[in-house]
Length: 221
Image 1 (cartoon, rainbow, N blue to C red):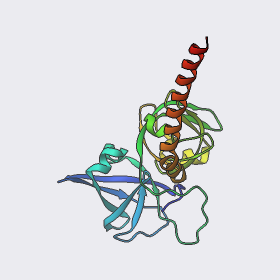
Image 2: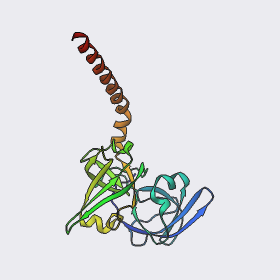
Image 3: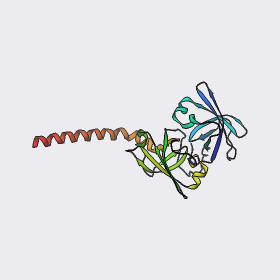
Image 4: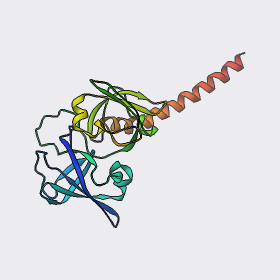
């Protein structure tokens, strides 16, 4: 479990394709936590297991499904990635609870930056936009952020970023067309899973009632 507070940027040092998975090596130098072999690390918001380490360089085996459902499949040597280490029991939560299980990939479609802050808009698959609300939480490339706009008609969301966040995460340099990992807030997913079918059923019932009412009106006339 993570909290979406990025400790800093790691650097991809090697990418090796192997049967049914890809081995990704990342230099974690300069980041304070000590990670042992078998430990977990969130890389761009994706929970991975360290399978080998040499100094500060850790290697992670990324399965085909993860490569397809995240932006990790796009990484190449020299790329920067957001790094976070797991929460410790009893630690203060400064962001929101993040599982490291990416739901989908979004695309940056607009970026506006001034001296003090930055606003970024993302295009998100419609089935996921429906589970988001303004002022709700979302993890973007592992960063805990608050949703500013949720446009369900255009399938777009936006967030606002302060200079500090821009300076320590990949969103500081990502541009229009770049892909980012999206993890929905867990509580929002649970509510959608529990009440979504009920709401859809009610919608169908209401639509049917409207049809019946219109028929009655015509008969009365």
